[in-house]
Length: 213
Image (cartoon, rainbow, N blue to C red; front, side, top):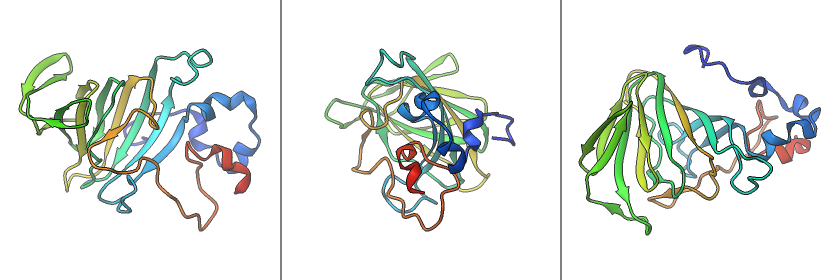
């Protein structure tokens, strides 16, 4: 983030001792799972399959009266050679943005309500231009380019084996990772973590455990 001059809110740097001093004034961060996130999709091979993420802003589809924002924004970080599991969203539309670094490929399929991959052309929207590509095409995003992902569009992220890491932006409708991800293969979203030392940063699903550390 520093290399590509993308500044994030100060709570990105808060440690556990700082979190212990925070009260209801930071309830929105906790309720909407803002902050750090990491996943290996439960496969135990983060170097090959996974993401590091930081959610900057988000509403809450479960309690919209309290948190009415209809939008969300994330940063995602991937190393060279990494990929992320094929999935779609039932509800969320999102723009995926290559913020800098390596190239980024997104393999695309149309999906149906039963989770099947369809052998039909996919409509691709890149920075205001519309194209048709065959099912399973890996669409290249160079730094600065963005791709719109519609509901029921399967997408798999992949970074080339050389060329370094990539910083990815996501601007979307309200995000609900617990209920709005349909993975093509059965995988997990949040990993099991065995703590062998005090965490450097709390993850977005660990705020209720702050007193345990």
